[in-house]
Length: 191
Image (cartoon, rainbow, N blue to C red; front, side):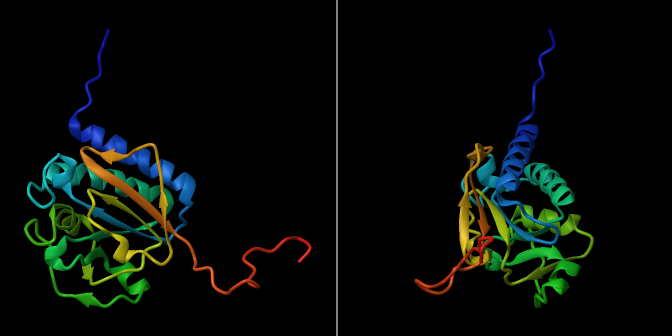
């Protein structure tokens, strides 16, 4: 009887893929939607945020996130750490599509974080912007992506509660409900 032993890295990728699949079933992201990712690779391996960043974890997360983007058509935006004021790494064409002003910074593990510096080296034409208003996002390790989500953010729960040792939070957004007592938010066939 053959026993399959999954490596720690493979487990991380499997957990993330499952979380993203369940998230998409609920959030129903569309082609072109902006998806922000905040990740502490240190937290994933059970260390304090910003203390033990790892390229191995970043590699596995990148694979799962790239696959998710390929399946859904979402555009990925990676949040840097606080040393770069939580700036965002994304493809230049996405920044242009969203008319986002560029800033001058190149993330490195010590200032930007392991994940942001890793993806900066993987993207075709990476740029850094100060902020985005994403349609949805994932926070792996309590990196606080809320500042980069459109209003109104809505938490989404999946069966996956952590990636490795890092706490997992997912959110989608919805348009603001404006108006008062007379406002109508959906139409019926008789309207």
